[in-house]
Image (spheres, rainbow, N blue to C red):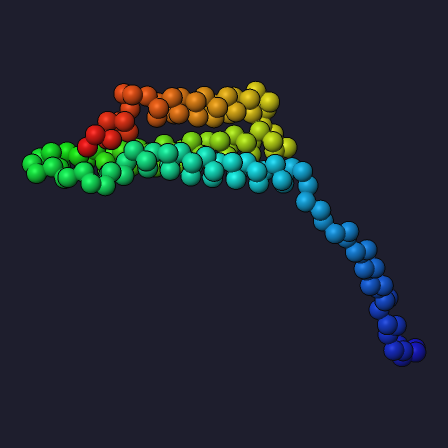
Length: 145
């Protein structure tokens, strides 16, 4: 019997070829539209908040009320007005942003849902602006305090 000789070297594996370099990535139109939706929502929020701030900041030279109950009532109205303005303006900006992003994204959202989100955001904006300009609005009532 013959003694076994040295074992044959394992079969060599060729290294994987390096992939070709990827072309430089350009910004797609879809990305630009999505970013414009975020910008639109932020601008609507800042714009409506500054609009409401005009009514919620007290006018200079108006003497504060001497009655503590009236002062507390006025301060409570201002706090509630600021809370309402910030919350509703943020909701408005957020709904416009989400409707814009969902409307232009290529996803599994149906066209009816996308249209519904756009309609909701548009009606929300219109109703909130009409309410804000209304003479019966809490913001108009705060001017006289």
